[in-house]
Image 1: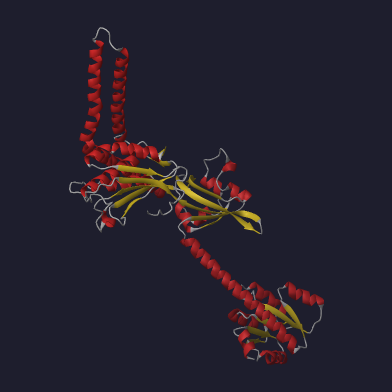
Image 2: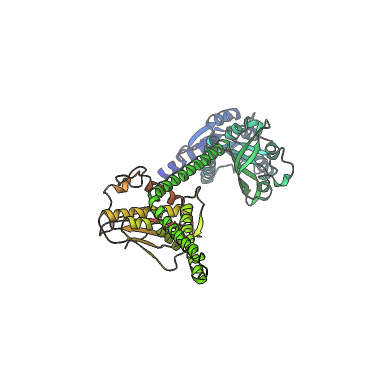
Length: 524
């Protein structure tokens, strides 16, 4: 009994019959089944009770005075409040035409008199369950529709629902806001005429056409859409086909005005260009500073071949003043003049290349050639610091993609720092420069010194602008190095070897592997 009551709880059954005995039989049959029972003995009362209580099942007698069951059923189905009730006709008539008429009016079932209790119970139970499920489904659908409407109304992007011809069947408030018109003015309009009225050159190639007609999803950015007043705006849109059992019924279009977004992107690009310009300027300033520090050494470097040229020229002049000059010796002297001039020219060429501004841009570089060129630049510092440079490269080292001037600036800065640090510590070991492949996407270049090492808080400060461990340093060298290496797509850092000193390193992307992560390198 408890199970039956639980299953039938809140189910209302309306009993309608002008015969009190019939009502009593129906009532006694159903009273212990857990239903809420209502009774009416004539049509008007039945309609009133049905309108107020919306019963799931109505057991309705056909043959009643004044208003028969057919009319009651007709009026029940015409009333939205009671249209979903399951009407089960009761009649002693066993006439096929009477049954057909009842079903045509919306009746759900038919019970013949005299009643069989088990039949009444079974039919009421079945129809009550069906109506209850239908009402729960309708309530859930209303809830989902409400949720859907709230979601669509809260979305900041405009949304259209189009039929297969591009007619707007639905528009959310955001679409109305973007278009500057009420939703009602958008519904029923031709999407293509509304937004692309001036684009008549290729009507079949208009955005969203392929989605509506062929079911092809689209996604485009920065296209021009028109408003109702004829003004235009840049937009991004996505269109998705509406399919029902693989049958195309139009498209759903989601779009947004990207005017502010494009303006922000333009300002961001300008800011990036300004930052890059300032980075290049800082790098150039750093190179000027480095060249200023190295000026005396380079003056000596250039002076040597110039002095040699002068001396050889004097010798050649004396030889030519003889009555019978030694032509082979004169040729040899002139060759030496040419060689010394090339030597001076090469020194000037390296200086000019190092001072070049703006940067030359990224190129495919040989690491070996790059480091050898840098080592030659550092020869003056080697003599000044009474040190040496040991360059070691792995075999078959791949080329890298980088800016040669900027990378050389970083390598030279690290090598000069290493030479100074080694001299300060009184060590005799040469600065070790090593290059090897780190994973498959990066080349790692290390500069190892045997100096006094780095302070404990170096991790937090060393690469920050204007921080320096030198007494006369400006603190822009390592900060600039980090900026230059990051611009190449690499990373820069340092390590503390167990036997003292410091190991600085930076990575460069292998040519053709840009964007791939480097494998974390190990240490010796």
